Image (cartoon, rainbow, N blue to C red):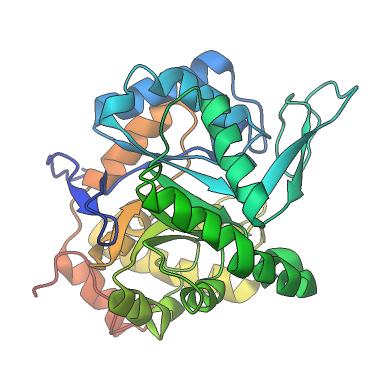
Length: 349
């Protein structure tokens, strides 16, 4: 029988801003039709279910469905706007695609929105992206503005140019918006912590949304990145806690095991299989362990799984509330499956 803890969702601070978010948030990429269409009524019901569950932090981006996620979230959040903290992103402008029709897959999204994303991290582009997002959302405020997908993982050698645009232009726009009180916090929303360290050398950031790089599978961010965040007063929002699905579904199913947006290497599958064995020994759900693990770190403000229907919200809340015995974490660390210096849930101190 699944053991449950039944506490309300606590709030944690974003850097030194005074802004607080619930430690469980809603990731808005699926509501932009990531990989498959999500009906409009299901998207609205998802937001309502998240509200009922106590979630008060929502993250989205212009890229998610080429405006679709922002439009859907804004239309529903308007009913609850005063209760929510909202983050969206800059770094891509949406250009019209005349003649576009249908919802064939583009960049992973099955969106009918007739726009194509174009990277631009300059001053004018950041200002325009911010204003465009307000219009798509139909809201008068955005709380957290994140620079989306800067870094070599996305851009390769072209990142030198894009990072220069951010350092010399885009950051100035972010800092001006924050100083004017139009946003409360600024940061990066990326898949690699290395670019976050580089950005900290050129600006004062409040938080970083890091996808897939501080998880039950990966803790290299402990080496230098998280200590630098602590010194700078910045906190972490964790996306991709399931590492693209392998920590949600495990390894005991037919078909492809996904990790980091592609088929998982054999070494990753083996490591997850070993984690699953420890889960079995303690009657712990793998997905619950993956969701709860990052929250043990004092610098993690929130974990934001992607949610696309009310049953998924209910399931996620159950995973968040599942009681996991301290011996489970001790056994993982003893087996070298979680770093010995990684904070774990329930540990003293």
